Length: 330
Image (tube, rainbow, N blue to C red; front, side, top):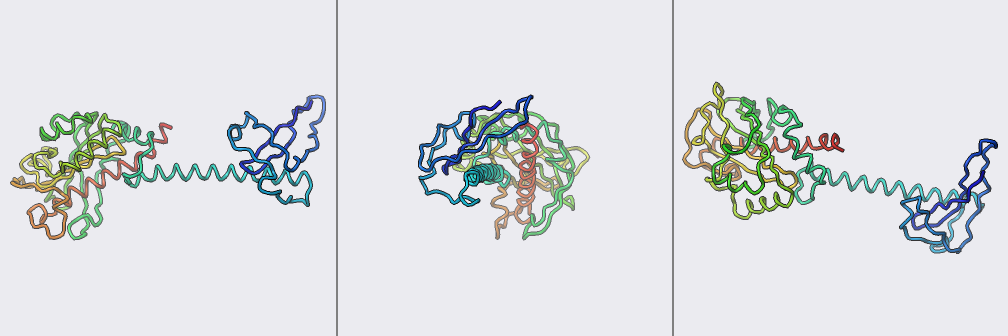
């Protein structure tokens, strides 16, 4: 039993006709002889069964000139040429979409805030607080190659992990008020010490309830009003008895950093101080303390480097985890 011929169309190149046959159980399948299209003849209507051709522009073979057949001008050669161009066009489309998708995901992983993250990546990042083990976000040890003053290497050891919780006691009251518009879904914190146990640093990830527009608005406010430099807007440390951070309280905060992400519903932060419990009269933002020539006590001790280095590495681990999380939810 033989069905009518089905049209196969190229992408802006031409058209050719091939028979569509259905084998009959009583006879052997035998394709009908192909018929070459007439040069300059009007193109047939798109076949709605091919989604890639239904809305595509139509061209006759004479629009750009007749292609040279591969087999010396035979009809079967013209049909093979057209099919080859269709396959080539499809491959180019697939490769192009892959490059576009890879670039979008890559911008998120590299921390390029100028390119918006895919919605799936944003949503996946917001759920990492309950789907990723603590050791993946806050590993027992973290290497800080070149993270210390003058490019010195650092190694940090985790000494305490706070239970995941709300945000009521994690920030100064005014900072908690500033963060209120994005909400608090969950808060994860851990405290680290350096190799000499001279310094302690609490690093945290606040998972918000906000959409990308709200996170962008908060980030713009922090940047425009310099809220990340105000000493009345500090994160609070997480102290743990029996560790080097046992004396790490509000009065011991020496340097800090706060980063409002716009491609994930997360606020990353860190606050550092001395492990011996000494109080600090004038805490200094990490961005100022790491500058060349800074002479404050936190800067000279490298506490700005401690806060900035740990916050950067934990934030980087968060970004690295979004790929596997997206794959699981896809």
